Length: 405
Image (cartoon, helix red, strand yellow):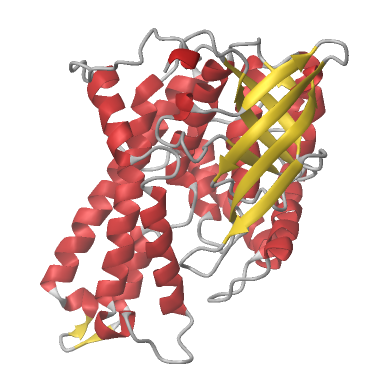
């Protein structure tokens, strides 16, 4: 297989690189400094709006929706080139572009597509994900947040608690899954909604993390009224909608741009002094970097393969879990490798060293990512059972009504 750019891809790369060089520096985040959340979201909105105005906001979406109507490889090329810059592309953008929009396009009505897709692409709407709960994280189908229909008002009254809601304290809308029927098995009684985060009854409490940041939140919903027009898909179709959304999340993990690419890590090693001259002159470092590079390339091309399946209308199913599992583990490994290359400076850095704290943040985030979006153990079970065809674990709650569990 030839992994080099085709002439068409090379031409697109040249165009994208020139456009990024002319536009990206204006929106770059300062090195070694974590700016205020509100300022980061402001920059993120503005950067997305700039991209969308030039048909780079979503490479794969048709132009009729505000996308570029491009190919899978063009999306990969642009992500590679964009990854060279320190740009605001956090969950507040990624959840909307990579998760909310695909779900609304697949399961929503035409008026919902018109209402949400364009504004999201233009950075006018930012999104958070209201899925996990204190007692329903890895087992998402066990969630207890209830939505009860008020037929007279044509609204749903929602009560419950969500947790690990990234950027819920500052985003405009949330994607929400709630239980609408307790008399059926847990996967069948769920319904999917979108909710305005300014709706009365929503209380968001930031959670301070070990990194010092607080972009995670716990979200309380007390008698929150959601119009039925904000229901995506049919009543009881929430699990199918959630799987569409989570497939987008897992396929998007490798493109998040949080980790530094291995090429950048090789350059970094070449600039790090060692007794041998530089860290790159150390055979153990070279071996570790070679292994990391091979893993990165394998993941990149496997991810492109799955995205090609989606572009053809095929469903990769549980195979999308492979991308997330590989990426989160590789990210933790390479973050640790970056600190090891610095040796003692990776633990105790000089006062003017702004780079090492970035490595610390990368490593801390990489450990969280092995749980967020699907824990390693859950993903391995899915891959074993649904991709490899191995026997499933015994499930005593299967085909049992939720209110009997």
